Length: 266
Length: 309
Image (tube, chains in turn purple, orange):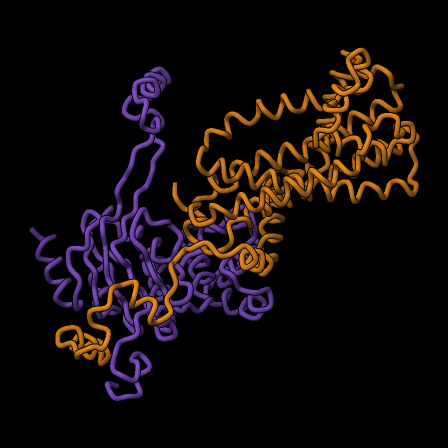
């Protein structure tokens, strides 16, 4: 593949970047409702005491100065302990969370795999497929075209006509399967997957892993957040290791995962 | 896997790249990458919004459907809730306080019902607007769409809700001897203008509420003050007879009162133009244009910041 016809290279042999993160900082502002002591008087006295600062707001510096360049054709894994800023970084790349400072440049519109937030438990599965598809930016015709595929893939109707029942009547596994099926119905240029692999029963997991591999083939660049080193090894060829919001290591999968395993097994 | 080893080898022995030494910004410019999450221009924004019109519609009717889906009577509540509301207000203001001064009972009851429903339309749009962003952060942080879709969607939901209320309104109008005629058609432009006004207001509240969620606690009081000052349950003309004329006019020129009066004027025979302030349609259009457009631009100005919580 390293000859002149590789679409991932320019004619003069340079790799084509798809995502560039330039010294990205992300800060969450949390309305801590008066901070430590929960009572109303404590909240009030805090407002009075702290004059200059915004009252009751705590800052969480979730990502601190991360820089990297992702190229076309790469599958990049993000690893790190809970709360290390992996998901936050993904959202910033997708342009869903504004950066405090620094910039993210992207080719096209990166999208997160997942529509959970757009779905409503009180609506039928049918309507949720429509709503979720529209929320992801698909057209009505596209959704109608893929509707049967989505329902079949989710396997919701294997145990009776569940798709016409409200989603709140589904078991948690069924709901997760439908959510994944809706989310995976769309193709993306830059695809970001946040631990979406671990839903449903064993059979569905195999099916969804297969679907993710398909999506990977169609996407230019894939980002995967996972705590399973196995799925990182299986899917990714480059890994970013984040710890406390800082980029600890950036390199080939085997090298970084080994270092990470060494660190975490201590 | 073959492509793993291929790319793995690349990372360890990089071939000399012509891009070496470029700063990230230069590299981005060279390959035409754009800043992620940047705010589009106003016209581009309108175009994006238009392409999401199906989502906006589906989201609003989904919210409406979900509202009563757990109740046994289901969607009947869409009509029953405004009807019960009207009954309560009639009991208090019509029978106990007798606030219908200057009007006979046949005029006052439709007057009251229309006032309540039309004001509720604005009130609930504002309340939904405050929480449009701050209450849907999960959605904002998960998916891409022009954020104005949310406040617009919520005021559309209120418009659909008002559609059900209008069934009650028409029934009440007919019940008190006002039969359909050509002037009833004036309801359409009046409600359209009010909808534009409400949407603009909802967008203003959405931006403010995204920064200060506390507004959700404060707004009920503001809205109630506004309601009592707008002549929902009494005639401003009648109650301010002794005050200078401009006081009444100013109160009647407030957008809530304007839209209420236009609906009453359209549907109630005895509520003629003597109850209306001067230049009433000009004000109705003016409020819609100023708040509608202004609210939209105001909301768009902060587009790239809505994910922050």
